[in-house]
Length: 315
Image 1 (cartoon, one colour):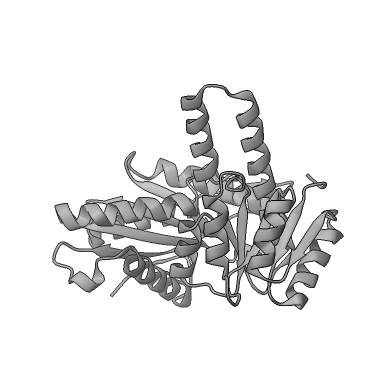
Image 2 (image 1 turned 180 degrees about the horizontal axis):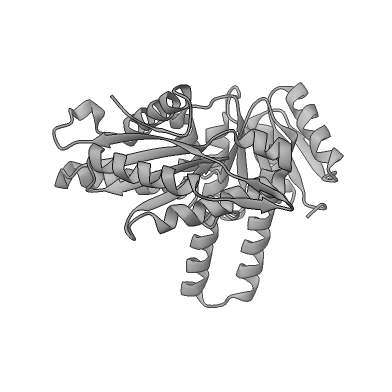
């Protein structure tokens, strides 16, 4: 993968230089740079690319439009695009996935995160290329590609791209059926400290183990997805706020009972969770995936501010 060809797109030359230097420091030296959307499209049409790191906010042709045009081109649509942006809103994130991005990196760019997400995207691209060349059965190919594109590689859970499509569908069903729809946002407490103290392999083990625990404590028809980093999202259909609180507390207690052994050391960790619900009598302006995610996020932050290792319910 070190020979993979990576295009960095940003109208700020300093940002391009910084990202390029980070990639080079880890052995990814086959890089190209574009300082505008038009230049990026021109290079994509001329060169073979394995990955594009794309800024959103650019004049004339912004990152959304660049990604949209790439995905509409039958020769370029399979190039994975990672959005690199200072915009961290849920709406910006969802819009990025809507136009075809597979991941995002928040500015200022962290070296470990950049390399981890770059390697994950390149592995996905490699998997796709191998499937395309080896699998002649179209139905099986589509199924395998769907799994690759919607599954988080580390935990085996659904990824954030799948989550947004799923919750949009459930909100549409809510409008018609008017059953309560709950969302839990959970975040592993002090995860950076775990990584800094024990290393990223231990951090990965925490995330994998957490995913297994989540699945054991949910109904078959509930969804849990890795939302990003150490944050997870749980979609509970036909579940009101009180029932959602019971599920969140069950998850919190299950995580708190777990241990990871590293030599003679025993690591225990906790999780904070925020719960929000769309109720059947919700006003029209509240019936949206953005609103539900925002409320659950705010409840999660309240749980964090309240001391961590607890749940909080949205107002």
